[in-house]
Length: 322
Image 1 (cartoon, rainbow, N blue to C red):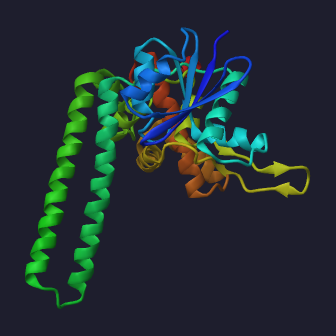
Image 2 (image 1 turned 135 degrees about the vertical axis):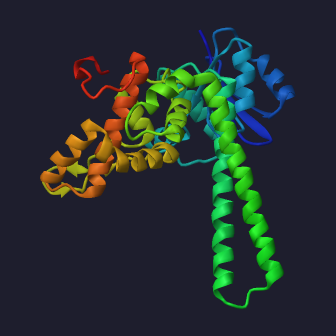
Image 3 (image 1 turned 180 degrees about the vertical axis):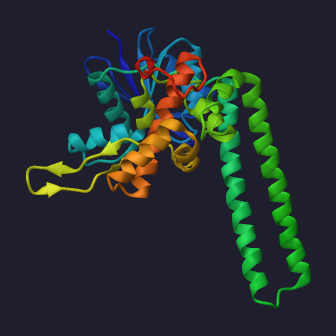
């Protein structure tokens, strides 16, 4: 019988909890290769190593055991949080969390984890840096604007701030160029297909390709829409509770923002989106609701085109869509 090894991981250490069939065992090990090798002594070939996606701290451990041929499962932390709540667990310690993860793994079907391709991992890291640079550029520009508005800003200080904005902008452009170069070298055919969709540009095409693992991580467009965070969320109970519907934003905010912006141009140049826009507008739907619907439509088109390995055709037979 295989064991489920629950791991609660942090920057310096990780707690291990598992049941050998008769007793619960608990270990506290260093989050480095020495600690990983120590845990190896407790494992058999068919055991599962289960952990949460805790920031970047889980990645070395998960990659190590995947490389050794073990079953590795990485869970969304929200899953374990909700599981703990359903069991009315009040204690919140690293030891208890490791045990809870192991108990969850023993009750539910686990999905095998595997490392992302190197290019996708690199692009994601570059996107993280790009987001930081965008924030710093924006903050520096606002600071320069605010001090200039006083009318008494020192010339040397103004020169310094202008230099900072120029430097950060240069670095941002360099990162954007690097992202595009890597994506074009590896996923050119997918990007060309996605960019054939009216309303989707290069940045959005790259982001879609990266978050979907070149569209290999999802089997249906509904899974992709849920991952992005555009799935409708209904709040209703009995006859008295009828909350206002809205989208469930438990997804990727970066691509959600890009898709929402794409819907602005798609309502003018994408035939299917134009038809949908006019139809929903006649029904009196608010502009924001319509644009979310258009973003969903674009995601469906992107998924279908990428999976079918074809290009956008406004007369495309919808029966062949996924």
